[in-house]
Structure formats: C-alpha cells, structure tokens
Image 1: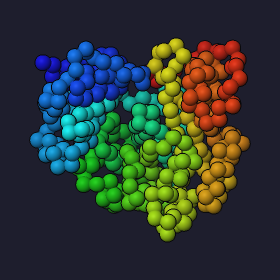
Image 2: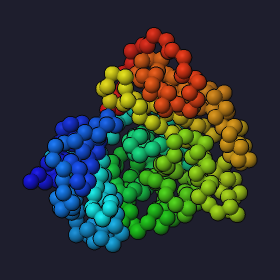
Image 3: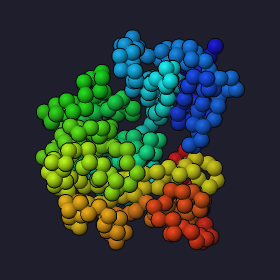
Image 4: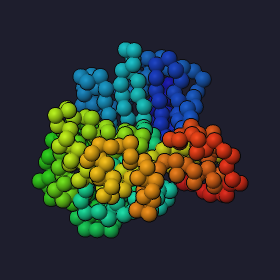
Length: 361
C-alpha cells in the first residue's frame, strides 16, 4: 500500500496544487484547476484514515478527535511543504493537502497591477487580498510581505493558521505565529501583537468579529495591516466586513472601515486559452475620498462606477482586467463570460489576439 509521502510526491511531480483523499474515491490531484485521479482504484475509509493519521502528530490527532476538523502544516523531506485540512464527511475521515512552494515569488512575476507595489509602501491602514479558495491569495500576501521585508526596516508580525510560506529575516524582523501551536486564537494573538512593537501586522484570514474589530483598530492606530478574506469582489468585501457585526455596532464599524481601508485586491485565476496553467485577473480598489464617502454612507452600489472612472488612481474593475486578458488572447471568450461582472461587455467578438505570457500554473 502507498503511504502519504508517495501521494504527496506524485502531486508535486504532476504539477498539482492540491491532493484530495476521500472515502470510496481514488486519490485525486488538482492540476490547473481540474481534478485528476491518481489511480483507478477507490480508497476505502480505513485506508484514507490511516493515510491522514500518518501525517499528524499525537497532539494534532487529539485536536482532530476533539474538534472533528483540523488545519495543519506538513513538511515532507525531499518533497516540500503542505497546508492540510482534515475533516469528517458522512462519518469518514477525509483530507485536502495544498502544496506550498518553497520559493516566495516576486510581486512582478504574479501579473498584478503596479498599484499593489504602492500598497507595500504604506505605513498604516488596512489592505485586503480577497478571492475564493485556490485563487492565490496566500501567494500574493506572501509576495507583499517579502517586498516589505526587503525594502524597509521594522518588525512584521504574521498570524497564520497554519503557517504556509516560511520567511527569512531580511531588513525586517519577521515573527510568524501559528494559531494552535504558538497562540490560542487569532483575536488573542492580534491583541498581543500590538504590544510586540510591530510595524506591519499580517493576518492570514479575517474569520470573525473580534479579529476584524482588532484589525481595524490596529490599522487606525498607525500600523499597516495586511489580511485575506473569502469574498469575490470589492463591494462584497466591504459588505461582508460590516455584516459580521450586530446592527447596533455597524455604524461605528462603517466609520472605522471608511477611515482605515487603503486598498482591496480581489483576484481570480482563470484557465489559459492554450491550456498551460491559469492567468491572474484582479479587481483593485484604491480608497480615495469619493470611495471612502461611499463606504461611510454605505452606498456600495456606486463603488464599481467610481472604480471605473478612477483608473488614474490605480482602481481597476474585474471586467477591465478580464478584458485585457481576452484582448491579448490569454483566455477564451467563454471563460471571460463565465468570470465577468457584466456579460454584455464580452458578448461581442474580440479583436485579433496578441501574444502574452503568464507565470501562473
């Protein structure tokens, strides 16, 4: 019988991003967004359970038994680093493993708009990187942290669950703290980080009311806060942050958010027309005076229009980004129609494409 290391090694060899182990199904790997079976034979529940438990420490097994689910990091010698999630489905233990490359990419190689570099130069405020699972949020966040650490002197406190990319101290001192191993929770770690002389605070995900509240306070009081959120576009990101709070607290949170937010980057990875990997499309909100007023008055329906006319400040809608990929022939019109906000923009035949490369695989 194959062990977990063999499955993880084959995932990397095939260029996969994720390995899925499920009961009564073959082991599957996701390559460029598409699932492929690694073998014909389905795995029975006991085999899947043993494979997963072999990847966990005794403490992690106890935590899984108590909570019925577990986020964890796994370093496999000679293979690489993985972020794992173990969980119960219909009474059976199952898991997903995300491969984390050892090299943190440069921002320039990811295909982001140049305004992202400007976000890295900020000294305070809130910058959010959002998107669905598997859209490259962690990679973008890591690239931003790397850029900051190489271009200024200070202290970066990173709160993660689990730790994915491992940073080396550079011009900045980088403290990576893992929830569960180094701290009990995001809110507690975030409160404590304010006493650790931070210049930059990184939160791998804004998951709950307390974490969002403290992050906003930190951004208001002179810290640069970088965080991720599972939202598809800029208006929904703002709406999500506010709706987490009870109605009587929302006016205060709206005021704080309008003051603290500096930028939102919402990204998607779209299959390339040539079948060679995926291309990055991103929506970028730069919080100028007009956009802050929209947030303060909660007129979120006006934000997209303001972004469309505010391109000189660095704003870019997802449709603008997708249109650029379509014009250069990087993606197909079918993919553009699937991922865009306004279909009518893409229901005409595109111009003759120009050739352009992408590094996302």
